[in-house]
Length: 174
Image 1 (cartoon, rainbow, N blue to C red):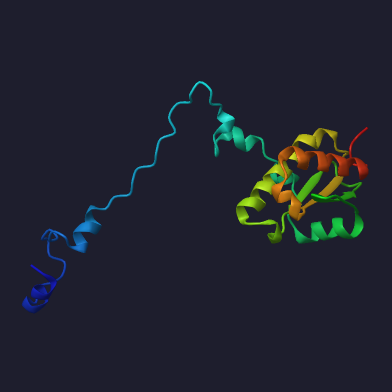
Image 2 (image 1 turned 30 degrees about the vertical axis):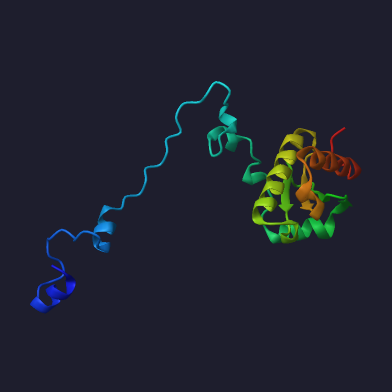
């Protein structure tokens, strides 16, 4: 029975008849969300660190406790710290006596590129700072600002530039 006929007969819309062939009600009733794909076992040449979203890849990130997050913290580094400029990066550093470990903040302005490009640059910079962590002096706040050429730079180019700026800023332990 079609909707118009039900309305004319005064029947309620919620009858227990199955929907007619080709109707939108039937299509909606039969629609099912596809099941998520299972991860499955690892292949011989595949490591856990290559899988995104796994515990192994998350362990290699810079912890949030080591990051500058508040605008006042970034402003303090800019106002009271020293700044070293390079072709790919700008490095701001502030030495604090009350801090026991270092903290770092990363800035990737929109003129660098799309969100994908900015996030890639930010991930690379976080990894560079994380791997250089043992060489940094204690009680340090860092702000690393990516410049437009950083969007096309490789990881090694960014790392070389960061190390050069860090040496110039005297933030590496002897």
